Length: 157
Ligand SMILES: [Fe+2]
Image (cartoon, rainbow, N blue to C red; front, top):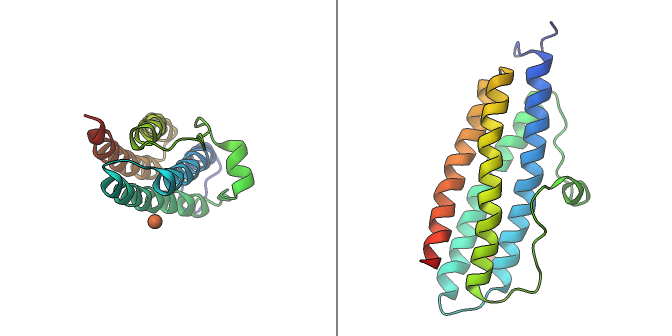
């Protein structure tokens, strides 16, 4: 069985790079949607949500950086251009006509929930393929995603 420098099997490496690039594409699309909301929302709780969105964006992008670098570690190519992300993202397209704060929060929460579910699935897929370290990258991203979804969702209660 072929192994790479870390001693991972070809199947583990390929599964991991495929999963990492898939979640990277969704995460980058989500990051752009979060900025779209950050810039365009209006409402009584404007400043709180405006600032929270930047925190959520920063947390998300930090995990995406780890994912992209993990692809390189595994001898893959991280795919993060706007054109390729637009093709590869599995998230629902973000509307550009929203203005109300609650509408933006709901639209972002829907996509965060979708992204979170796919991160959880990626934990199992990469663990099963034999790459516990990539599974750990997804676990860390998933834990942050859950916390930030709670922060966002709490504005709607
Ligand atoms: Fe800003």
